[in-house]
Image (cartoon, rainbow, N blue to C red; front, top):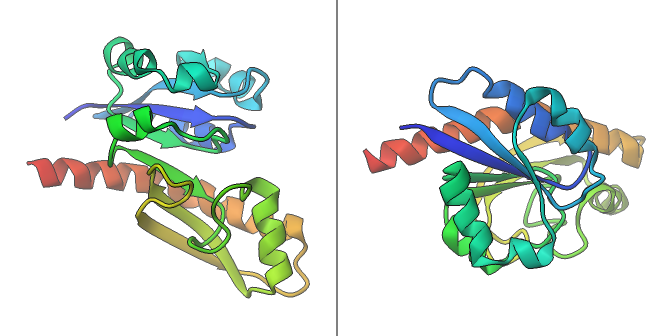
Length: 195
């Protein structure tokens, strides 16, 4: 079965580019669209060389049924990946892509999740807690921020001497190493369950 992925971004796009590269020559999965909530996101210029269609959307458009229809009819999207997407995902999308939309979170949920817990805020909370490990979580997207069922987690040790930047770097390395392969594994498992 062939799958068209849409990647939703808001920032620099390092994860997005990593995913695009991973699936560049995949026989059955392709990145067919990038959606940005930020017209000045670094991801936009980073992804230009790949020639992937891009949509910049605001809150109202994101929440519309017309947007869901556009994803399905114009781009045949059947799986959505949130890769540093900072806008709350509306119910129209969580319903339309139920168990077909994943998010990456830069901590070991359920710790350090929810409203306001993104990017550096997460790593600052991890540092302040004195935790000896951190990691990344991939989870299904639900109507509750960071509340969807956890699919997989990867951990890395942190030392008391690690700065917030050190913690962020270690966690980002996990994302680069594991996120694309996990997306591929999730889609393969989805296909197998429907066979």
